[in-house]
Length: 216
Image 1 (cartoon, rainbow, N blue to C red):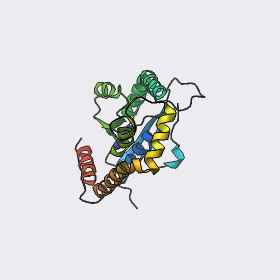
Image 2: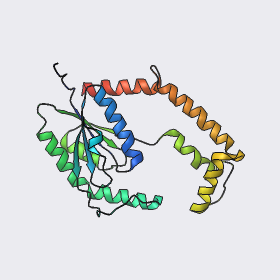
Image 3: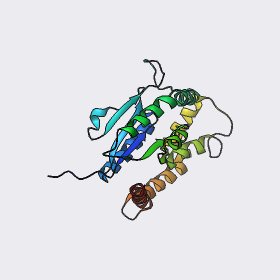
Image 4: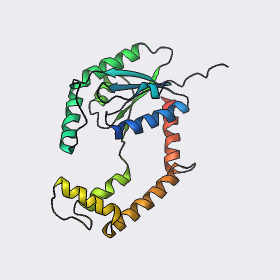
């Protein structure tokens, strides 16, 4: 059977945190199903497992982190890690993407998709004349617990420590005072499921994205 010709290569560059990697790879699977070839550039730290995606190409870049680096548990430490990654990965990423561009004559690179946390990638894309699309991986429902915990909801009006936040979130999940939040999230999930169905806004947006990529 003759293999279908690819629409071109989409290069994706996820942030090496699981909540960012998974949506990026889900998008990659969808784009692959639409006829694009997929290349993933990733850091050595917390890298995805290429064997789980044999239909993709993976290229690892240096991130300058120690080999025993782990994902921090504190939010402030995660922000610090992301700042370091943005500093360390600029040059390795530029070199990797440049090399890919120089060796893709048979299957040209259509565009670059990067996590919004990679601040330097627009400059690199501009310099190499590659269209860039930004993927924001956080979802709408993720904002609701914070809204209720941090003073705009029924539980907490002042600053509290990490342990108290965990207890507050626990109460929101199971007790009466979190009932409103749980109801809102349930409605939101129902609406999001409708968005993913044919004719839904997310379904149509994805079709529009593929159409745009095909036009590049």
